Image (cartoon, rainbow, N blue to C red):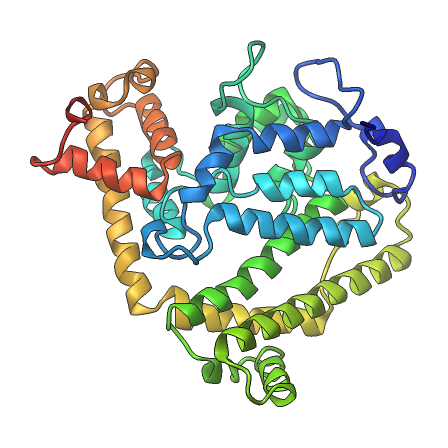
Length: 414
């Protein structure tokens, strides 16, 4: 059996791509693989993590038990990965790094999607708040316990940079000596504690943009969830194809497919239209990004980081289509009364579990209870938030029953 030399693949990358051989390395020094690049190794570590396996039972929009065909965080992450790899391959960027970021980007999400995150953020407000992106970094650098020599996965600087700031710079440029003081800024400017603490050990240059690969992965996320939420929303009956006619650039594609295939059933119509919409978005992003690279004279990866604005982007026309689609989904799906009802239940589950374990940390599993600092303390709140954020939808519901239903079996009764 032959294995691909990662250095051969590197030779085909653009000069502004992230080159594995030029990686800024890992926080803890390790001997690297002879058969995998540093970014391929990062990807493999993400895939083998406990947090990645849990994504199978974490919701995207619908709670896990509501149906087998709706997206979960795992299937969504795989879809993002496929889109990111394809776009990076076409742009001669490092698709292994983009794949790693796509697979890792949702690891920090709570159970029950954004409803769970909102609830955990509310109860954690007195203790520094909760941010799923910062929690992803916390998982990758601290909460995964797999290796003998360190906590976390010890990923490369480029991967952690992409996780931390794939949506853009997090702070204005300040001297490194002042970064630790950012945690004392007013709430709307505060750097999440997990980011602040890790950045003090391993400077991720939070004042710059991330790599082109991270920017591709971020917009691949947008393409995936917008389009696949159309699919899930139609499947759930939350809105109709006719209602999508209101959305410029979306309804026209459905009409185009209907005209080409007059007898097509709705399931095939939906799939055909969505794949065409995705293709148009991907093509638009590649065309616009190539134009930006040429216009801005981008020659190195650091040129991308220091550009002062995103390099990877949609055209203005496609940005408008995305805004209209997001607005439609917000009004017709995310705020649909059926989704609101489940979201309300989810928030109660998260809040009640948090308050219970905060007040009675002795009821946490022993490995978690060993980390607490006493009832009601900030240390205990962080431990409880970590415990709850790591739950899958079904585990959170089962835990809620075990804690609050006097008829439910305890762990000892299983």
